[in-house]
Image (cartoon, rainbow, N blue to C red; front, side, top):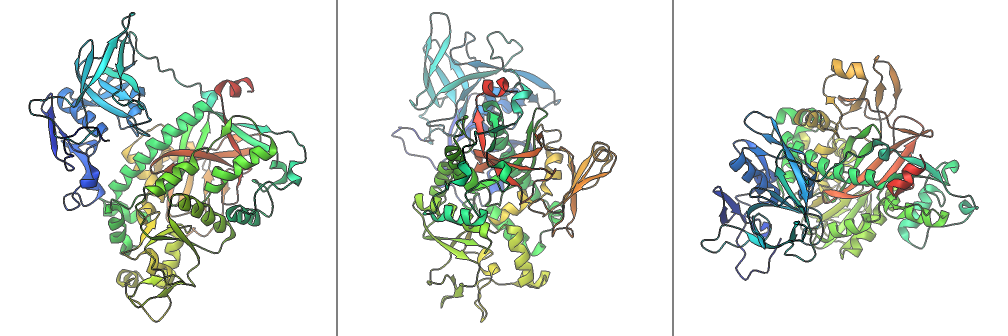
Length: 633
């Protein structure tokens, strides 16, 4: 964040001032961070007494650190600062007991107190994340706070606060705060207290609002008319793959769609944001532990490159996709596809065009902002020069590549699509170049890393030492191969190599160990426990994809269903059985997209079987008002 202060911006990590309780506040000007002092992501993690506080030097990190040092308790991990407003307890470190938290809306008759958490909503200056500060002094006409990540200037001598906010007390006694930024808004304040007088009543969501519904549009012969614009290359490629103008492959699905409530979408957003943070936490944990990393069935020869990828602060994810079960039983995540190119065009373009053509007016598309979010992610990607989109020759990959190419070009990037590797060659500098002689430095790929690794293993004859010794920067008489591009030091690949870790099913037992009984997680283990046997379980290959080689067992250890595939040689993990909801014969899985680490939309995949595979259909998903869903139960 920035302010209008005329004082100079202090470099990252500079002490800006001391908050009450002698707690330091640091500059979070990330552009000035010293890579020698902060060489990797792990170096950005802040700990006090071995307790994780957050990431240097963000607002949430400071709030947790201040509470711990002054009060002895901390609030739970949150994905976004505004989520603090929904928390109902803090954890007392001394004995792990819980103390109640109460939230008060801006304008509440219960005024803020010193030590309260002041919470900003997402939007404007605090776009996406919201913000949190600590209240240090409350007066009738103003309030003082201490905070991080709003301005990076050293405080004037003698100052003991970050900034002051204008306040007013209304005729009825309500305390109102005005935000310093006209495009941001203050939610209210959160305090540790037993007294809930005037507190927000955060009612649990009616579980029925999490149920999906199957609906139909009136049949008027829409399926007989073309509705996708084949003058657009991506839509032309999509029509070619689907062999017609349709979203679902089954004829009986032409006039059907699914709806979910606004409440369900809000909870999916919260789940996506929180789970992304948990998966990143678990990824860092795995990369600090070689014994755990060995369970991921990744060639040890690649471990140094994975570490290098994770440690590179520039090497961020653009996008990933979560797979969820959504029903009145709750929201559970199956896995995180951090390295998948599929479903984006269907969600971001095709389903909305389907709705317009078929006359579906319920609610709005479940991915209305996906394209814009991807656009912003590519604008902020730091790509310089040409970015090459590398794809296999599969028909489905044609429209994936062309869809993303269109987004990149809207973001101002220069893109070139490469099919396969047959057109690649070496130049006189020893660099890999495309057929026009353009050096390959930036890559977005439709290949999943696991598919690429299979090719890389084959190219190196599955020889671990050969892979370890393989030099990607030494030209040879033979044409360049996939390994020469994707593992080359001076090539930046999206999604980065480290996404092999959170995409791997072996991350699921790690998550369960780190966050046992988390409401969005399913129990998972490297070994088949009695608990899993007694309640039913699913066996998954650690590096599997596309729903291949999945086996489902009930609580009597009887096989219910299984899929075939090419990953039967892989080690297995075991995850608690949690069947997808059956919506009038369709087992339905909601997928949410994370872009730059936060929620950007959703889609739905359906299948008559219990397992969603690469051949399962997409169906249009619409978000409707809560009352509309409940009225048509």
